Image (cartoon, one colour):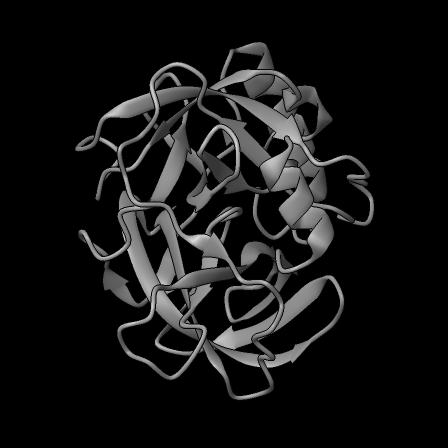
Length: 237
């Protein structure tokens, strides 16, 4: 459910239909950029029973039970609270193992304003054996001209993980604003991570600073995940 200001009504109708059918909402993907392959194995897709991806997300380090899949609350909305969902981490949605987890929405999520537009999938039985990434702790100040790497699945190559760089144009307490770099996230690519290296060391591990949320296919308004409130929710979903 990407680009909500473009198609709120259609997305709402679609969501009601697919929830009734036991599935969810559609996924989009990266415009431009590159096929990701194994470059970001911790980025996954939530998939419907048909195998179609409907949102992206990222496996992040968590105090207990160890790792959770971080994504957007508006992928399923409040109707998704406590629902079982299926996640895959394959380079394509048909090439990787699947994992079942429970979907939880961050307290204070407001659909009308997208406040606290954060959700997690908690894997309680079979957990992915994939290295997780950390949330940025907020020390990385991304000014205009800084770049992030965005990763997701879907249209125009539905079910294929792709990645691209985007360029920061500004930021606020909840939002990171971006424009096209080597590519751009596009329709329905919600929940996919914006990744940075926290310092100039090329060997430093990538960290998550924001999640794909709203925008056009050339400008983004992505939700920051660097706050203490988000970290607390990730550690105590």
